[in-house]
Length: 118
Length: 110
Image (cartoon, rainbow over all chains, first blue to last red):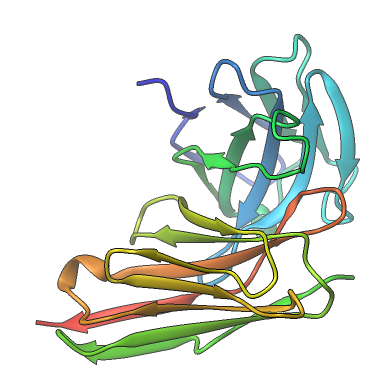
């Protein structure tokens, strides 16, 4: 399968623990996005990378959240000292930016990591 | 900040009936994208609209982008049970990240 993959698919943790999620984008894609989705809502933007550079972070991304994409390929999203309010689906998407020159890009989503904080 | 509103929140139709969901942005969009998410699944890209007034069709699905590039609609003709899911519109902001609407959940009675 050459689509976006995410690991783990499910994570249950206790409040206060740290968790880390991984996203492997489509191999030639230079942009990688992280979104968070809660029940009944659309995905909310968290942050994105172009190659290894983190270009934007949402205000939703508190200091407990950190994301990296060290070699411009896979990315990790870490949540420190998890809280019950962090329970959500964490979605990763990737896209190939810049080929059309008009900013038209399709974002392809991974299956998500569903986090439950007890 | 930029907001994208979507209505209705839910729609329950009899198989064979039509379905429409509407999307409105607080600001002009560079483009708008539509996604479908099945229960328990992830958003799957359907289509992207870029030009003012653009209309695109995919079999029974018709997508429109408003003249002012602030609103859009998705119309499904003669729904089938396979159409069940939540349909999201997502507007691209100035940095080309997606701002999603809250989605319209479609339920189809067989």
